[in-house]
Image (cartoon, rainbow, N blue to C red; front, side, top):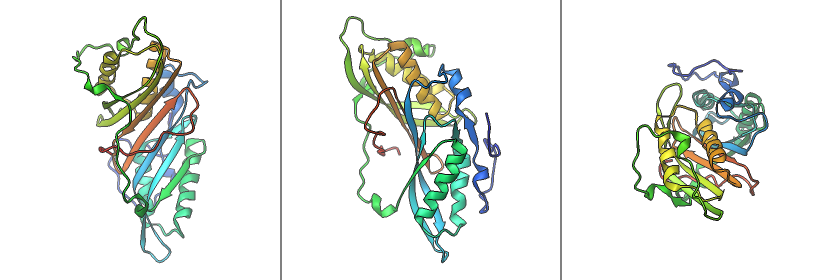
Length: 276
């Protein structure tokens, strides 16, 4: 499953200034997808949108510069990158002299694209451009309003069902209660999730109980979103489906996977909710 980089998962490491792209740790998507029933022909399009809040470098006179970077990994890329190795890679720029922000952007895009096996978009902004930018929650009908009872033996996908006899509906459902766990360290990953759905009405209480069940689930962010997508697709057979999760940041990075089986005008808005 590992194609490049040294595995640093769960290890104590120093933040050396001379790190380069060889530190990036690639994880093949295919073995993880086999586990959840995704074949060679992907049943979705999408991307993983990362926001990096701790990026700095030195200009040619040695003065530090700052930027916020957005990294967009296409879902069809054969590899994803482990977040700790990406944190170490980005941190190394803090002691590197670079001619300007565009040079930093191009270097990061080149390195990440090589490791991911597909073109990775890198967008960078000066902190001043963020002034006055509002935080907002994902729009949609909030599932968390439901007073459901959670059973320890709830059986995941079996909770997903449609309401019999009802005509198709198009709706957007949101929960702020998604929590999964890192498969290596066991540390919690917190997120809000938005599900856009067109088909026979989904049982909202069952869907909420299903999502809460991820509190015991160990998987990477990207895999959680893909499993939610696949489970709803198979159990409810909607005509159109998209799943978008926005995880809280860890180590100066937040990861926001999005998967959809219908074309849109582009990626969902890269919003920040209050926990991000």
